[in-house]
Image 1: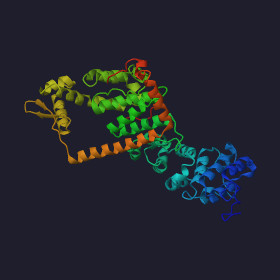
Image 2: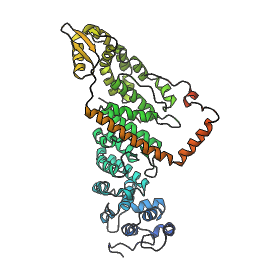
Image 3: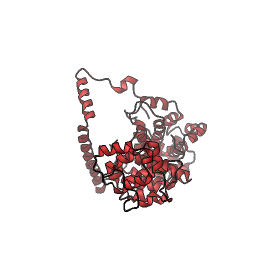
Image 4: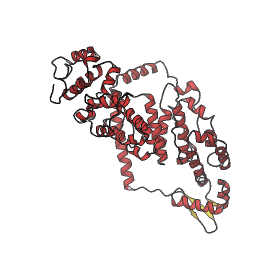
Length: 466
């Protein structure tokens, strides 16, 4: 017996004189009857080597038996989590918590154990078992959903995500789980600290990531930012999702493309050319949707736009895009007026109303004054109802220049770091050399050429953008 009253740990702990390889072999060779939760907890509290402890916890019994043991209670109905703390026993608590959250017959851990672990764990220790971190994150989400209060998961997952990766620019499996909960519960602002960091690093040793994780994170992030009306950032995330290269186009990418186009109409009044990395089939499929008709008619054909919305309202509602469609429709007159400023120097209010589809001159006047006040246009309104347009004055503040220079320096430093990392990547160097050798035999076929000319022009979550 040791000081904690638990059985002396088996020879797999750090107190053994055998090597890690031998310890792993011994643990793997134990039968289920040789291992108990008490011996596991004793090993957790006495082993100082995290890699050796991780190897022991993985191989102390077969997978099914191990998970049942980890999810059980000590003799006398004592919760093993009361004997451990996150700072000293990060790895052990990670295994026990993740097992209890996923084992159907187990007693679920008290919520304060989950919160304290996510707040106090040592990230370097948890990174030894990245798959268990993923299990913990999914378990927290499922636990909160079973309790009928999904937003309960936001705080612990936020703490887990803030500590686990070296930086928030490292994509992990926690990112998409956290973002989908924020979107599903409409707690969009909770995602801002995470979304403020662009993803620049994918480290598979840090998380057992999949291609789908990347799509879900950027798609959910785009939804959250669009709901907060941060159009520029939402546009970027939807574009990353829609244009992430893959072997085939994904349904989630199609949903991202629809929302990307609508966000661009709201934010810019027009769409941007699609990324060259976007799968060609996405644009072909998009052209067959009502969204393409809406885009082509935007912003001048306002009556036709209303007709599209009325005829396809059920579709837009089912696809959770009606809120974005409505906002784009509401902003159409403003973008139509901005188009007029590039053609005319002066126009009467009645002429402007006729061009943008508003018959009431008072409404046109209010709209013009609102756009002048918001600096959307530079114009003067005379007493007789004549509007004189002019080019907006160019203003540069020193703080703006300093901010742009600082951003440029940060981006330059980031590109230099990424370039050095790429140069150390054996797979990248092999492909680069092969590409150079292929070029010696003639130009390589443009990827787009295999699919014809690229078209130009302009998992849905249960939410809307009202």
